[in-house]
Image (cartoon, rainbow, N blue to C red; front, side):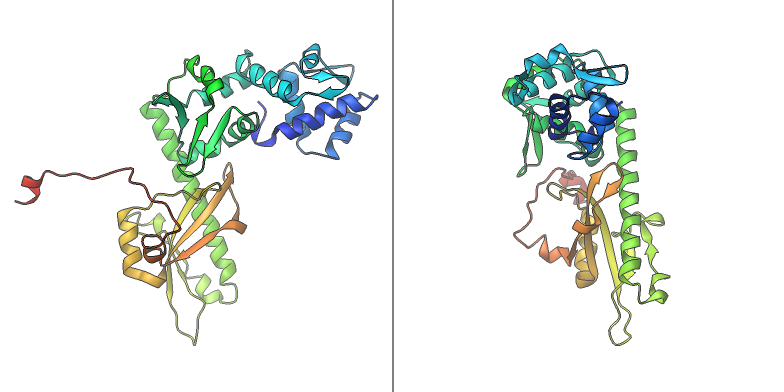
Length: 318
């Protein structure tokens, strides 16, 4: 199946324009024309083939009759193209359509609005199809509240899908396992970052400690060091968060917050943006020193209670 992370509406238009503007329809030639303007020819080409918008014969490729719905006098009607793509991607009996519909089935109807607030593993896994459907105008993103909305005129796409928004214990475990794997990869990425930061101090590099592999209750993931001043060795306690690149949303446990208060300027949050499946943008790493002050008492971060702990008063007070 195609990799939706390699597909955008812009790339689709580039390929269609390439077919409209050249006489030579040989696949290799079309590919060379396309590659001058865009990337990932194979994925975009396979998508259009499976959606029967283009066809291949004798090593040549051309648009099918379906293209008449969005092409007129060699000009592309972008609105009609979007509608045709939406129809094909949600109605054809293909693996691609099944995948797209399973994604749309994740949207839940609450107060007559279909919304989706995915955990990080799902956010990363579905980022390709999500971004394409944002381009197609099917989905919008609320950055303030960090959720995705299905636009009113497309709500029927979720309503008709038999895939339930309920989650089996097995599926939940799989997602939690993926989150844990992503978190571990982020920690390893930060250890590499710390080794680079301390490159002039090889004796300290050897002492960097991946704490979370030994103690998940430590309140931080990595024990590193500040760059020495006057030969004084100072530890740096690092809590790593793999975060969505859109808004850097993360969860911070009470235990982690308490350790931040305890270690103060020696405690750091490293927020590492996830940009694809098991890939990170280290260039946009955000390092927050003493987050108990800068986050808990600052005004640059939104906080929201998603879980609360309760105990019966009369039993606790005994």
